[in-house]
Image (cartoon, rainbow, N blue to C red; front, side, top):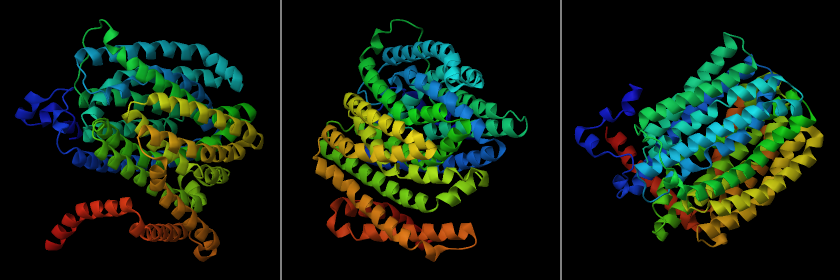
Length: 519
């Protein structure tokens, strides 16, 4: 049943005859509707992916030890750094390009594949070095095995880029959801039935990459031509190299924390940190992924329509701000319950780490919004310059914080993120051709609401004490949501953007409510 959504045979005969993987003429009308429906599809898919990741985290955290996760975390420091070079941003370069053809996409496909194969070799070569740095020879085998994912990622890069460019969100999200389900199931079975320990995590990663590649080829039945001249893909190199530079800088602050903990302390200490970080990444991916996947192709087609482009940039900023503020307060005051529920009682040390990491959540969403603006406007050069500067600030913070272990590094991440965010807002506003104060005004109300609601919850915590943790968490969550909505309602008369968002949401919901009432 699922594959019928992927196959061209699921379409009408008249539609099949006209379909081209490079044709985007169907996007010329109803772009706003497609963007909203795409975001809705992606949100639904992310909700299911969220549930899947929670199950995977909960099960594996009970089957494996902190040392198992720490060992994989050490291996991922090396593999994720090398993987940054494996696609040099080429899949993303296809999305905002105004016109593409078979020659261009084929050239980019083979450049991507050749680079990934070469860098897989590099990864194999540095595996013993990484094991020596971490003083654990088990890391060598993990790095060698995980490196297989490099060519698998390259093989599906252009297929997913074409799906995104054509805004075929249902197929794209079905691919990712199905592949993650296969990977999670594989990892759990390997840990539970086969008792493979830390190897089960690595096997799950490879299973996910392989499944994503196969399903992407089914969902987008584009076939590259025979290898020929790669010159046609040269124009994408500049875009890709700037994006690569930004990705490398981003890796420095997203992986250097793990490297420093693993080097200065041990696998168990790193395991507590990586599990807390993994729990935090679930809600970030739940919100930022769907919004980004829908908005990037839409903004790419509005570069010559200033008014519509500005409207979409500002409304997406308000969406990021609202969800990040609400999530920050909710996760912070339910940290102990969340860690115990997802990871188990043996991960109690991760509670303090998770609480500190939550403080970086709002800045993380500001970065996600800026990244969308940079990529869709073709300004990966600005993205690279900011990312390099931000990476330096994060590295200094990590180096200072690692003296106090994982908790110190988590605090360093929160402090560095807060410090660089104002500069990021200025940079993204310039790229979006907006006054900085206009963009700041979209984030400010939710940020203020987050602070007010957070302060109120801090002084009112005793009111929610209950012997049943789930009852206490539910009461806190309900109070936070209600207070957050009330705080936003108070600013509606003074903020035209929020009023327009409410009117737009009501315009969508009203027919559904009316129809249900009539039934």
